[in-house]
Image 1 (cartoon, rainbow, N blue to C red):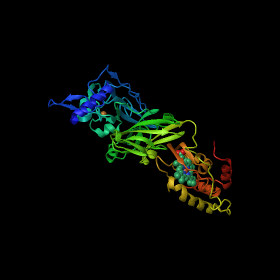
Image 2 (cartoon, protein in one colour):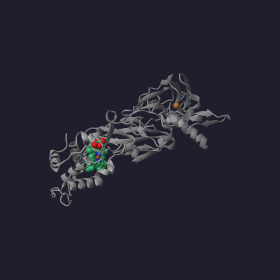
Image 3 (spheres, rainbow, N blue to C red):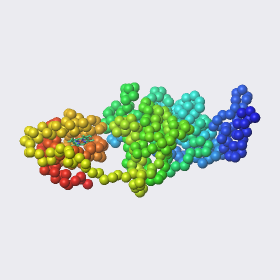
Image 4 (cartoon, rainbow, N blue to C red):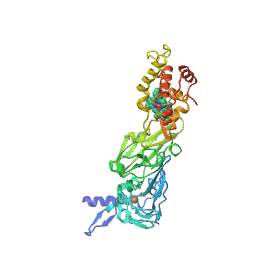
Length: 485
Ligand SMILES: [Cu+2]
């Protein structure tokens, strides 16, 4: 038997076993009149056309259980909407269906997709869509170019399974993408995807605003930053906090989670990682090659991946771009909150003990220092410890460390600072009308009562603060009282 005949015989055997799902492609006539096999083509769509039910990210449409190719109708609208990009910071997003990313589209390999693209009459721009799941010029971009108040229709057959990016490709393309015009289309293989307990949709993008990170108010697009590829924000799902707190992704102890992860760019490549998780499966670059036990997977700009992870213990896992500055200083942070009973056999925190108390020279009751010596000691502590974060001039660093210089927060309640140095500080605070949400570590174990009193007194009497004195006995009392509840 010739290899071609053998292939065809196998195909018909498989077709007999799975009547409606030939794993091998149907034959199509080529231009030369000879028949050729087109992988992914299972023939014309069958049954009634299906209206795709689109949901807002991070939601995804339900898995497909069909075993035949269908005509799937997808209706999308491009909209230009002003929304928050971070708390108190607004941005004029250009979107598919009002969200960044646009909705996740889910079809089956061999489906015929009939895409209706409307452009909101209120839009200022023409928009279109380039789907990476399309085989043909521009991924459909030219066929879908749509002026405000118009609708265009474009039909293609999804011949390859995988996770694909779609995006607007209207010039200037980088600007349309930077303003949020991208999303994912998942083409399921004929046999479907393995069953999991939770599925979510996460897409990274880099944003370029004229203002600095967290600068409040309406921010406009900054072409210069785009050209330099220096984004102000790097975000999951188009807004800082879109996957945190009340918006966190959820799982339960013992469950499995699948993430469809895309990267719209326009410029940065993502080192996608889940802090506290390992990807049991990672579909490399969104294709069919599955890698296992992966810690960090690369998601190129205009690329995607599909990862699955187990959540065996309760707690919060963090989604990050492990080019970690972007996570902690430009917004690329999300959460998976896992609920359920603790499993100490897998994860257990032991008691914390102090082992260096005797050997370390902490002058807890030193000879009483004069005022000048106290100030000198405070300056030493400030330079050795506080300046690492709050900076030598105490001005702090935007988006990361609040200033201690002229700090309205410090001056409003200097005694509160005792507890901050002793026990650390986390959560949202506002200093000189700028918000900070970061973590100051506990320093009470490495600094004596005298050192804390001296450094706070030093800070209060320098850097244009309002003055005042903190005594070692006040620190001692605060230490004994323990952290505020
Ligand atoms: Cu556009």
